Length: 290
Image 1 (cartoon, rainbow, N blue to C red):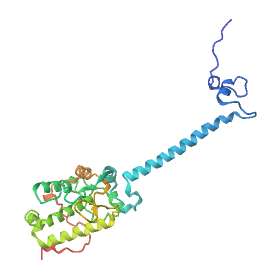
Image 2 (cartoon, helix red, strand yellow; image 1 turned 180 degrees about the vertical axis):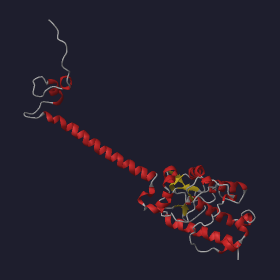
Image 3 (cartoon, helix red, strand yellow; image 1 turned 135 degrees about the vertical axis):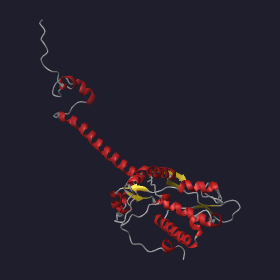
Image 4 (spheres, rainbow, N blue to C red; image 1 turned 90 degrees about the vertical axis):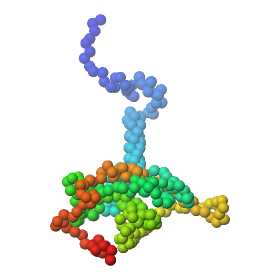
């Protein structure tokens, strides 16, 4: 018999499905069960629609969970008013928190505690020596801190506006209080200690700033109590379980972005004609100790 050349394409129906109206759908009947009289072949759409709905719901739940996780991990301040938020680039880079337990026992060894020494000073230097960074005009606008008196960094320092992280300032203040508690040792090692008026002004500032930090954060973790050896009253357990940021990571982040200058001692001098912001006068700035 003479064979014919193929002339019609094989359709999807020819390969993958059979007509429910035909008598040759025994395989489908065996798999799906017999079709009720009058049931349309459109019944096959329901599994597809159901899968699509489940997929959409799953995608929505995943997106929501992912967003909440990112906010909890890096963007904790997103629910705050824009001008009160932490510096977003820093939060995104080093804002992650880790499980940590305070070293809260009395007398527990620490590189940062004890009588002053070169070793203790070096430990504190590593966590307090930071410096200024450069931020953009948009950063200051977002924080409501762009003024005509805002310090612009010179081109040699990368341009932008001068800023620093508040955590570094708080640690500096704590270190100053530590040194003040050993002021006989530091009297000839820290310049401000040679002037009682400057020292008192500086200490009062640090105490007041740390007071505000503590009251602002109002830590709501609890301190528990135990019965302990050699003591007949409840003993506090200050070793609180916390979620903490990594201070070393923050210091590294600052160092990588630190603005540099050739100015003596790294201190910028106000340019002629620069706009200034009015502040309450501090006597020692102009005339030294009274």
